Image (tube, rainbow, N blue to C red; front, top):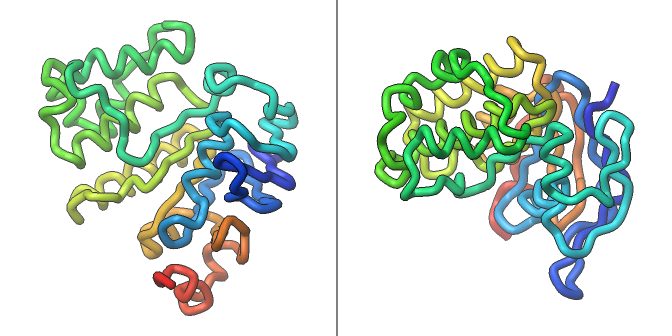
Length: 233
């Protein structure tokens, strides 16, 4: 079964088309990577899935239900969690307050945070600290925890390794794998760090100039097949 199936997606900034006839699917319970260099449309794809683009067309099915006409908050309540590039932590709010905002997505229903604290001990340790006082890696862990607290069915992760030191990248990779294995959460991972993406993902899509140009099971991907798409032109 497909958790998400996208067919013929087009998206625009003003009159400029940035996504061209994109087909992409996320199998239930799998991790899928979308890779490519900067500016090719990866983040726009995630924004389109969340309904954040003013102009887009095509079919988008979440567990076989069409969501293209749904507002972003409706998509969130249907089970799509989103961790944007840059994390969007509220710097003047405490870690605990940032987490409570995640609960608003699911109508404020209290969730047991114990699993999140096991994944990200730093979040529990710094509950009273302001989000803006955390390091980049700590903010990334908080952003993922904030999305997870709403118990999503599908998680969209946009460049989780950006600006993060190598030791924390390993911790985040371990947490993503653990989340997937223990909860069956489907994950769409947008990433430029190719080794990180291929190590985690079951399938890999490559995007170039707003189009999908390659798709294969990660175990079958030879890095040299796709590395030229990762190079700045």
